[in-house]
Image 1 (cartoon, rainbow, N blue to C red):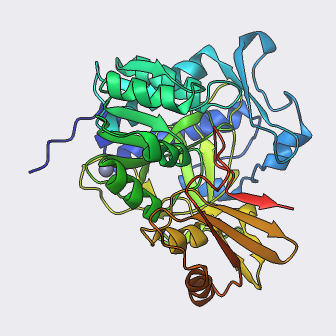
Image 2: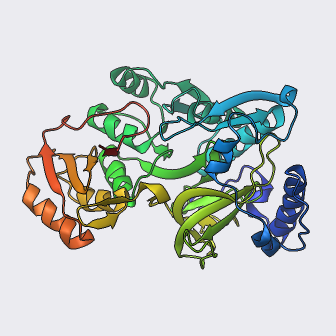
Length: 399
Ligand SMILES: [Zn+2]
């Protein structure tokens, strides 16, 4: 017997026709704000509107994409800038308010309730995870522990001593915690901010004895709060469709793909003030799930992201996403959750860890070849042998 669904607001259960009306009105307002004089009578008319890309944002660096006067911008966040010119995103006071609402809704979908202690290990700073979840958890009325940046053993102790039921962090950080945590009271983890696979989810759930839920966001759109899984269904992240309009396109032809088919996620913001984005190409490869969810929410869902368009590894005689390699590796319980892929020219090294004496590198290499057609050297280290990073995992190193 499952508990009845508790929603944060009535929009989550609104009929699709009503949702479409709201989307259409908000889309018109967004296009006007962007200065795009394009007549829109149905949502399908959006297809005539040009895409926006990360290069568009970079070309107008630092603040050329804002549509409000500078004095209305109360905060700036930025991407990490590790892969080129960073993208800076401005927020008005109303943007911050909407963002907090969306994250509160996302937390409520995951079963978080007012008064629950929430351990937030997403980094606070230029990137959006720390502040985004902080504001959302406060809006919901939860008790936030801003733990990011504290040493791993200190965080583990806080989690144990406060008997914290909710963990917010990157999945790779949860994997690090899993090795050191010991007895704990965590019931649910909301993980996101980097690619992770259903195999890693299963492993984390079993090793920690928790429910692990997928969340999706990106700093250009606000941060966390774009989509999140409900605890009732746990099968794809509900997109906050009253605030974001989602399309999935073939990344090469840019034609829309059918529901259930994988392609590049394209999002249009419907309520952002400072930097509305129209048909923003996220680069993330996913599929839309438009079948009803057991929870009764009417927002469509997105499958867990298999990778970024640009993440693809062309080495070892094949073209593979890191997530495909993760699926093969982590299907072995004897292989640890931390791994790293090193690409040098056409050569691929797969570094992983043996957790209980499993060290059959030849066997793993053969599996990678059989499953993905990729020739890789597999290096199986002792536990702790693969480098850790405090925020997002560095899964791929290109030399
Ligand atoms: Zn659901």
